[in-house]
Image (cartoon, rainbow, N blue to C red; front, side):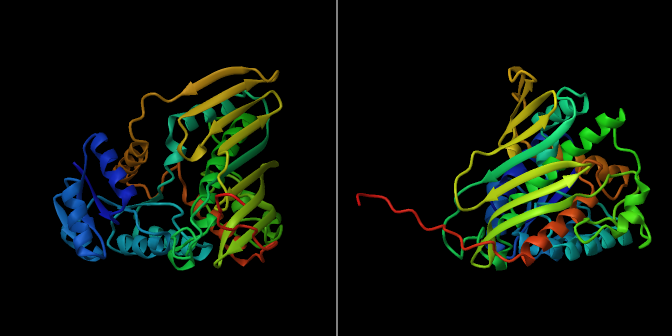
Length: 377
């Protein structure tokens, strides 16, 4: 039986417990929180046998096969490091890190200890995303020419709200932009595979060269993570082409980001200032794919070159989308590998660079966001 320990006892942790019950040969053996009473209540409510008010005590006493980290983003890196130093594999909620430095240090610690970690980017495993990936890989929309995505909602205008609280890891870059970037990357890699006529991108040693003399390593600061990654495992990192951000309470509340990878532009919009029509659109020269709510997708629609629907996939089987990432962690840990090919560490390194750029960027203008008022004028 594969035993997960829990760090964090919120709503998303409860969803994980339900998913673990659906995965074969898997259980949650213990829950831990900084608040002992919270841990006890969570364990009792979710049928978990042990509860701890200290994270390290849980690791030492339970020796779980892996830990699922579901605390606020501000504590992700610290707790991941704690687990890795105890040689306990980690599945951590996204965004797993808040900057490139955190990602780089944890990647190094994973190599040093020989211990697996994976960001809980569950979206990359969902059947709807896999079907869309298959369409791109098989050339159903021809050559991929552009990806567009919008994800967002109107967060409560309150500096204590975790979405807007810098001390708690607030901001779109630490919460929803990571979905847009890392899901888009899935389709960029599929497009590259389709172009090469292979199942996956080939090795690009010029990109991962650590020599400063390499042309790929001297293309400027917008080349993300060119010196990192595993040759042949992941392809070229994206370039930032443009960035617009509005900030409030010290965090980004609206971010418009344009990237380019393999020569394909990617336009990403994320917002905490207004409700959005959430979707990802993959535009090819022979058709397009539309994915509503890409971060928790349950459907994908393929359109032919004439704009007519050619295929509509609806996921009718998934009961809890977290089950796929749980199975992947179990598979990887049992195989003794340090990272998942589906959510490789290079994603964390590249995204850390994006987070750094957004945090350092001067706001493009004052946010016009104000609390809504209702009633007669």
